[in-house]
Length: 103
Image (cartoon, rainbow, N blue to C red; front, top):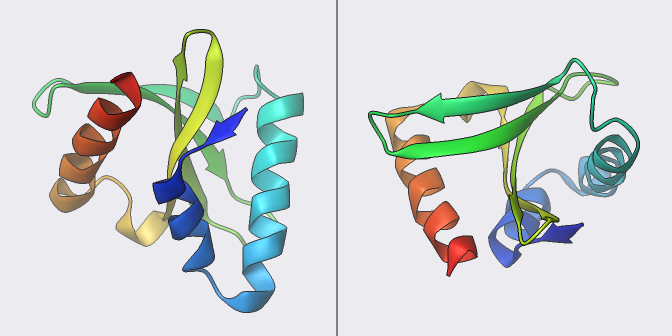
């Protein structure tokens, strides 16, 4: 599993206490629960993007973890609190980040 620099920054922008726990939860869920009900395939044709999403809603977290597969490797490219996920601004940023990992 790979985490992009941008996704690392997303995690770093969480509170000091939450940052470490969030990073651990993301890694655990994506390694152990790839067929979990909280993982969905997101398609937003109006933005020209498709990606996978992990809904992390436990222990006080309400985050969406965006990831995709590049050359059979899982790559986390964005981490969003639910309040900021799926907005036009967010989806435009997703398109940019997806372009970066596909290069």
